[in-house]
Image 1: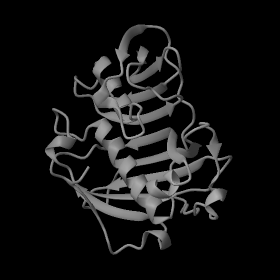
Image 2: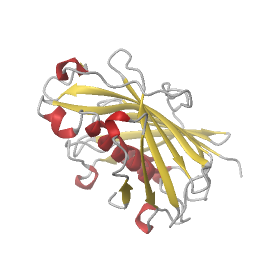
Image 3: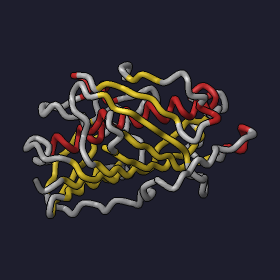
Length: 252
């Protein structure tokens, strides 16, 4: 998302967090002129890539050792989605490594300093050939624990949907990213295309996501979802269990 303006004055590797700003553009919003859910996760993804590079674990560094960063779970709490042309301030920082899982946190504020969105996520390093999880020890350094006491809880596994509503989806070329699989952000487009709340203008309150397997070009994802009291549980399976999302909407 090239409208993110990264602050060159912040020495990333020596700060408790990485901060930057961006103005929400027309391509970032939905028909209600609010930030699209998939665009929000694209922002998180871009922030993660930039900050990891500043800490010495960027894309080039990890690829040189035959590994890639893979996100496993995310949790998001939304007070308000930013709107078109709104200037927002972004922040990300890392947590304490636990069992080959690397926590990362995010915060988005408006110009008045009001917190709009908070998020947490769990990442891992994966060997490209073996698909096994690895530690950062091979880099001769560790991810810095930057926790400050203002983090939201780390994500837990979202509950799987009961068998109530069904559809299927075949992964197209346009959904693939540079790693050759369906980008995680596209699962939110997929989910919002099959449930009624987004088109009705409902506003998201919380999101919990889990990514279990890579979906590649031509894979058929069997979708099922259910809704109760504004909480949608969406699961994608088939030959593999691909993802599970819990999307909770405000009542108003």
